[in-house]
Image (cartoon, rainbow, N blue to C red):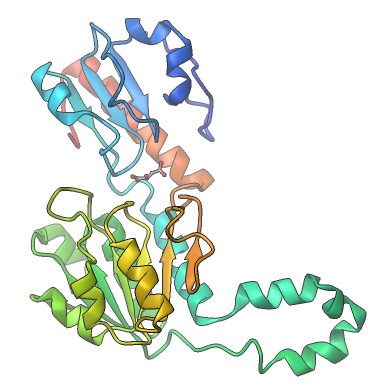
Amino acid sequence: MFQYTCLNPISHVGLDLLTDDYKKTDDINAAEAVLVRSASMHEMDLPENLTAVARAGAGVNNIPLDKCAEQGIVVFNTPGANANGVKELVIAGMLFAARDIRGGMEWVLSEEGNADIAKLAEKQKKNFAGTELSGKKLGVIGLGAIGVKVANTATHLGMEVLGYDPYISVNAAWNLSRGVKHVQDVTEIYKECDYITVHVPLMDSTKKMISKEAIAMMKPTAVVLNFARDLLVDEEAMVEALKEKKVRKYVSDFPNPTTVGKEGTIVTPHIGASTEESEDNCAVMAVNEIMDFLENGNITHS
Ligand code: MLT
């Protein structure tokens, strides 16, 4: 039987994930295993008896991997467990870029909208006209659990989809729907696509991979989406390109002073995985990984 300490209950299922509040308690120092969502563990003294860390999510950049490796601590993540939640927000991001949903909603709530809503609304149709996703080209960079789901769903919306992944696994290739074209050269995506979405982990080699040079290759109508990790996009270059109308929109799930409120940006507060279902799936998968490791010594998704 395991004991666990409630540091801050944020998961839908009531499992308790480590948050920045760990600093306020000594209980963590006795832990053999830690479950963490978004809090950074980089500054933390790792508990003496710690043998496992499970990240309730895909990315592990909030975990000191080198320090864990040195101390023989196994690190797990929960690949795919929140893929539906993230995928659905990516699709919503594309729709928000294609249609002026926010502008229309704000107008309806405005004084003018309230005055004689039905009559005035007729006149607004032109102001809030948008474009359709159907028939547009989407480029998906990174074909892991989330990228594959985005790619497949987009084909059902009538989009033409190009997928790029230099490390594509047999599994990912197998899971790609027949409508997705797997390209070998990422510049094909930069040059040709109307929507470009990035789904890769943050590593030295992927930092600012959507660089000034990559942005310069894009069409002036291009929409770039980042629901994967902060720092994958050169945001200074992106904001500049938006200002000069060299790209159309930047949709990001990472609120930064560089982008928030800037022309052509649509920013959400890192809520891709914040659905009841995704939180349940991540928490359950992480707990199962830890239990299987502590009880049976099995290591999955490390
Ligand atoms: C992930 O890496 O999957 C997300 O960051 C999960 C989260 O939002 O906690």
